[in-house]
Length: 415
Image 1 (tube, rainbow, N blue to C red):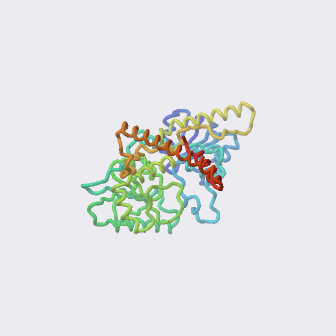
Image 2 (cartoon, rainbow, N blue to C red; image 1 turned 90 degrees about the vertical axis):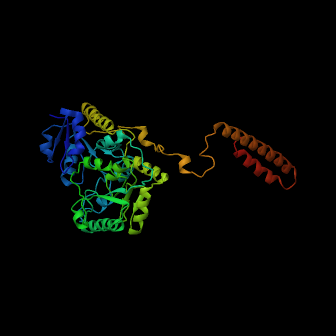
């Protein structure tokens, strides 16, 4: 019997594939959601990709009560509408507030903080997404060069679920129609459409999603210059490819994952597209920060995921051997210092960020050292003059208070 059972279904098999390939016979994918049927496999660890479904929530809770380690792997970004506005009935269940699993493999620092604020302190592990590892390994440079001499090739796409209510779908459709109308007929822009749920028919365009595993998207991202997308995990994939990426949102709702550009009304469309054509470096540096806050991607995620799983199994064995009926996990099982630091982007360059500054573009090191030494000498002489003035003021009746103030200021200045 496999010691690791991964619950798949609903299009989640591609998320499980890296783990199945790594663990081999130690892991198996199952679509069964009944606790009794799953218990027959006698697993040590059960992995799910969602708890919103009632059956999955019940399964996770029951496995934990039976002494089986449980892990929820986040297969996509947190999204406001899915969290708070779906389903719309009064019977909707809280989503991960808190989660039922022992541990949650989070995409990045940002969603770990949010999940912890929902009562999941001690459960969140900053892991990333193994299915993005090929993009992480490529380490593609961010595009800052303007697109000139040819049309801007712009990928316009939606999330797999463009809305959770008919009203939300209509709002998303309206935003796409505004972009279609704003750039229609322009020869300097070529739109590549990638939309879902037959929205392309309503828009009268060609281009829909045939593959939801992400492979088709990764190939498309290699052929475009910039991306506009609704709130979706594809936002992170686009940023990983170094492409200027704008978030299309007419819903005007909060976002757990943000972007350097945001389009929330028709008047913002053309300025945003022109900025994507020639992206300012400061925007791309901020986009790099947004990416690394939302996704642990400084290094591939699979080694961290494997380490988390092995540590969960080890702690469970220790608890069982000690006769304890409850599995107790440490606050962090995988503590990667690199994922707790916001490192500067590779393109963080003061000369390029401030091209008109008289200092940051200089390369004459010897002259700059001489000027610095002269400036430090000048500062020392000014300090000496302040000391002399202070002593004189101290001897003048009624000015001692001013002398004390100068001494205080002088004391705070480095010598």
